[in-house]
Image (cartoon, rainbow, N blue to C red):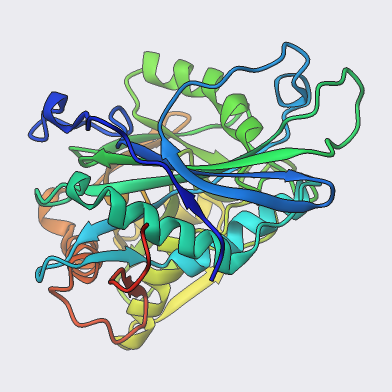
Length: 357
């Protein structure tokens, strides 16, 4: 068991929070998990009150972008026990991002225990409205104070907990981007690093000015193969199978994506992970074979696509066609609350006797 010190708040801020109107990522619980890397090891693991940090202007993250993060959810089970969804996969992916960004991996068991203790300490912050959750944001960043292009020698990892509502409250309109690109093979598209999201903001702003909610990114070489949406992986439901872009080093290894593929295959539904061109999607739609599109991500869960536009062509999907995506969303949300039996071993019940001090 890891040595994690605990300092509790004197007065909780819960009374200041309107749990009926949470939004997403705007409210934070009382405590956070923190650990520092120096002298070649992670140390000083602690749970402390959420507070602002002081930072030197030469902090290397500000200049060279060594910053990664994850996102996962804890929900309140129907029996009052908090439930973590696929935390093991998120920790694995955090460490894959760390490797790609030349950062130290974080000990799996320490992070798992730290998150569990944080959840138990701030258990009262877990919202119970349908679709809501305690969203956990582990993130790691460089802390050296040095203006030189090199990997930092010190780092900090923090886990914030944010009671949140649904990310998308309605189906989305997508623009297939034919000019800007998100990532290329050999780059950092597979890493959940801050710079990927910063680079997407300007084209996303342009898309929103045109009336779209998000961008459907195409590959950076041929500019025709579908990659992912800015906040989620993408699935296409055909009459006889489901297809989704294959992991090729340029798209994020989605945890919800992986979960959906497992669920579909367990039901005998054929899933193909493959190279998918935007022309193939338009052709399948024209032939009447493409009946549904949906996105999948930790925050987004499963989000219906209302329309997708590529150049001068727009394809639309009616609400009565969203049967598979709706069922998948209900299944994942049910797994998160224990209302659906977890035969997939996706969930972790956060129970005592995890010592919380």
